[in-house]
Image 1: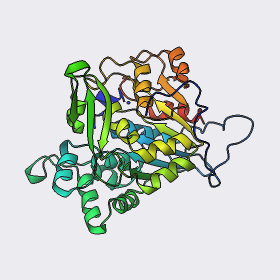
Image 2: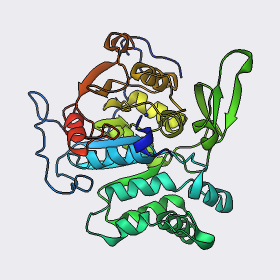
Image 3: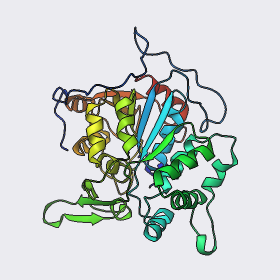
Image 4: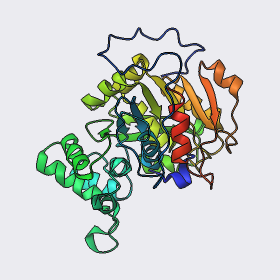
Length: 354
């Protein structure tokens, strides 16, 4: 998936204003109760390495974050500061680089974005955190990240990719769970362009590099099954975050999974869509912040709150956002270079939305 440094641009049918026609929430098991009398107090932000902080916090909220690539990893670095439990739901549609080669050779879901999320949740004092990101630069392994190889090897030994992620999480002493959006590999396709020249684009890399405006993406098979723990985590969540990152090639593939859309529709959690900081060329060239939200809604997702950076390169029309039945919230969440979200400020803004 695109690096957030280039793509934190980070990033069904459109919903009608007010979302009163949602299905009634199904009864849910006992969930963490928020304090009465307003929002829960903000957790003081610890000092130190801003990318590797935080427990789970006893009594903290259950947070689920959806997406892929560096945008989701950055979100996890923020969420682990205030959450009692963290679950990452990760796109496995990538078909480029090391992930693409391993998919083709071994028939596994794309491991690269899963690896990034495991590292984002890893204990800061384990050597495995750095080892998982080590990339070989010569020979038959040239271009492969060690973590990708370990995940594929664990899947072959254990006979199950989900169990491989659990074992890797224990190895890295992760502060949360990392789950694939689907249990099987999926292929990403897109409807791109307009009029008689419109065409279907196939493959995550091809979609990301398409010079035609992307109108909608799909996964093949369209009825791909979600990991069984994904829907349960969304239903039990206090907060669900649609993470920044590659809009059409990281976030949208997760939203294309039918069971995930259904879980988002009925969860009692607040669903927060975090907007990208800048356009991703060419994937979202010409789209403003409001267009990003419309694209998410067009893919069938429910959104309650739209969080965007105050002073973003992407123009935001709050009147149009409210007309879509979504509450816009502006906050100063960008890092010094303006290209990636600052984990501390990002955490404070997200916690304030509980």
